[in-house]
Image (cartoon, rainbow over all chains, first blue to last red; front, top):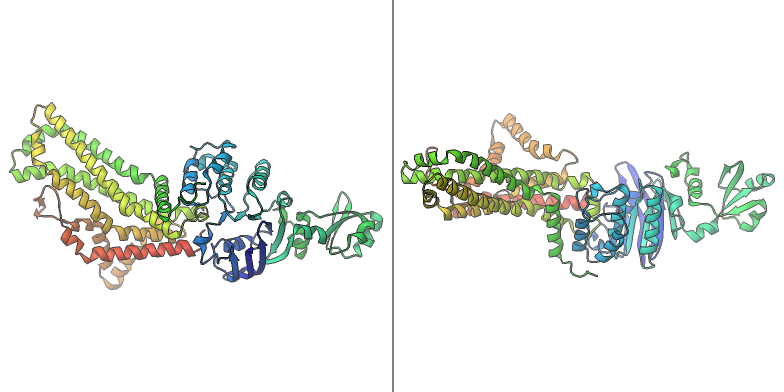
Length: 291
Length: 293
């Protein structure tokens, strides 16, 4: 059974269209990166999946309609929204007590074990913690919940590199197993590309790429063209060309690797480069991914 | 796993506890009001022996009224403080969680909006009157002890207080008052909670200026004052839970006399509860179906 099944998902706010008909299927045990520029519809899509906003089109999450069966759905779904939203007044121990008190699938021992590895004191209030510590606390709470779907909307926003790295390492090593499904959005594409099993690019309310990472590696190839082969490479119809250290890098879609091998060095493009090619190529917002 | 121990009831009780963690003035405010009353009472007790001698020259009914007066005032001060605290709590209850976006954390947990709103409502409706009643009774007990000690230190017989103060009626009036407060002010809390969940900003202004604006429009348009009289009736209406016998401005009973029959047959009590339920219903609907932030 698909964890998420969306067909023709639409949402508009007055005249502005946030989702213009999205079809998406996410299977169990996948880690999907949902990537798009600001205002592309990422958060709207996630809010619809989490039953926080009404929508048009059909959407099923773990076999339920998230808008009408939200209370039931939240037993199996957990999420971290795009800013640190833990209430500032709450003490660490109170947060653990409360979640243990209301969540039937929360494992207190697991949360406490995770917190013990950090420098967070259980008597501290959230407002006394650094931004990184708040995220660690939130992650400790969420990871101790035996949820079938975890949604992370910019979970590492505003954190420094060490915390971001630790966040994803912990998520992958201590949380993820193949009965769980994770959706994550982030602007730091390069940091998550190695943990994803699937990737979807969203732009102006539409999915412009929806693929497993294996398929991405099969479909797209980059050629660092030898200068004497540059014109030959260009004639093969690259979807993007850019320069690094004076060398031209050409990105091809659906072209046989064997036919490109004599043009230069081949490699699989990074998600960031692919993003720029697929979305940045469509208009002039080529800086979007780095924002 | 400590799973399976979560029931709807325990989820509700944890949600109530969470509100008490968040809004500590709900417990602390009445206690501080009681403390302030006691400080004032101790300062005024310097003249107590002199006053008591004068009181004892009055006719017996008036002696009781005079001796009970500080106890009545203490209760009123604590109730008034509680009402202000309840209003501050309600106005922020469904607004602050949206402003600081913590609603997204609360809504990531399997706690329904109905549970959450009812947990928020129970604080002003039931817990606040109970806290106020307990604080009043403790304050009264301490006032009695202070009076007794001061009279004994000045070589007077403390029994003048003990024989004239109607303890039973006093305790009864406090407990009845707390119960009546829960019923009577429910629509006030309901309104404030509804505005708290609805206002995009400035819930205080919306909560208090909307009724005033309505009153003003009514006055200008029709020259009548139904809205303003309804508001002042609701705010001061706790008095209707008691029978107050008075001779001019002089009360004849040392302690207000509970009037359960009159109060519980007053349709305004029940209309108020219906209004409160409707407001909470809107509050639940808003929290469930509006975009959270």
